[in-house]
Length: 439
Ligand SMILES: Cc1cc2nc3c(=O)[nH]c(=O)nc-3n(C[C@H](O)[C@H](O)[C@H](O)COP(=O)(O)OP(=O)(O)OC[C@H]3O[C@@H](n4cnc5c(N)ncnc54)[C@H](O)[C@@H]3O)c2cc1C
Image (spheres, rainbow, N blue to C red):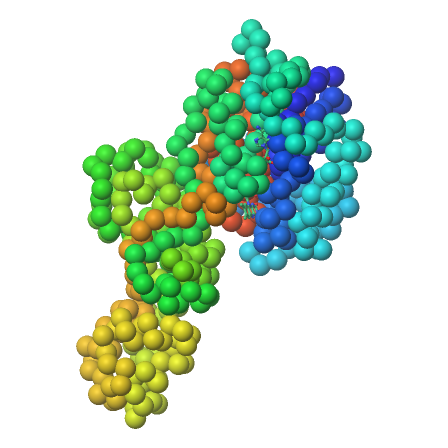
């Protein structure tokens, strides 16, 4: 039996502590907040999308950064195991659209409750309001921690599960990055990701709150700012491969991202599932490029089909004014903006609209585009992109290759995934693997 200190009582930390205790280790959690799982509480809009019921291939495909590093963790403790684990703790789960898994109760507090019950059942010592200040080493291996109040606690192994930098009010303020650096680890550049996209335009403000379903969003390079970008991310192909390429220069107009789904206009730009995913690909490259975001409002129709559809609509409304002829095509709120952008007078009689004007309208509906001015910050980012360099961590154990006895789990690592329950799965799987690997 070893003595194990878990630093951080979030998703990864609670999971790690449960499995360390189940393995028979004397386990202690130091959590700096007044309660466990503060971030888990706000996940999934308070419902906690705790994992995704997809197959393993899909699981890897949804990890944007360093998916291969998660090989042992996902194979050892997969999404199926996550569901079975929570059910064994008495939490009933359900699967919703996009294979997203939620508690039947729709309350994230129930996820935290069953984890806390299990921690207490396994006699894990939980110290709340107890920030860890630094890690102690002796002869090059983990020896213990120094708490904020200066007291030292010694142990055989330490699991750093302090999260990233996003939503700092939940306790994730980058302490783990600091610990890692002090041990000699590299921390890759961090960026807010899965975050709203800000646009250089007045139109989003006018459209604020308008949600669009079944649209296609793409992102292209609008301007190359630097000659030698250091790192680029490619959306995964069908096999989940080739997601990261180095020093590849993108050309003007090159496409960075494209997907189909839902989005919503905000006061400063756009958000919603497809946009959040797009932000994850833009985040590390904003210093190298200016991007343009394109919305195809009618992705199911080709330009020709859309033109034919508009012709039909215009034929039926031939004696109406243009401003009254788009209601079958677009949501009310969007009509005003599209009319303005199309440059056709709103009072023009529909039968007076020229072929060229109609073609321009088709182009606009297929490509409503705005210049990207930036991304939201950590206060609103779902995830931190970047973290402890995974090359310096043993992927089969989550143990530091530099300082034996120190393990890392969850968002503190340079691993991030898309929305859909994948980031919590990274936390559960890596927390499990770290605990499992302590001998
Ligand atoms: C609004 C929002 C919604 C989300 N929704 C989902 C979702 O539905 N599904 C999904 O899969 N993912 C979701 N995520 C992402 C997911 O919540 C995180 O990826 C996950 O919580 C990371 O777990 P973690 O344990 O690594 O870090 P955290 O959950 O951030 O936990 C880290 C813990 O460490 C503690 N800590 C930090 N420093 C110290 C220290 N020095 N000493 C002691 N304790 C310390 C913190 O207080 C915190 O409790 C969401 C994120 C946000 C912000």
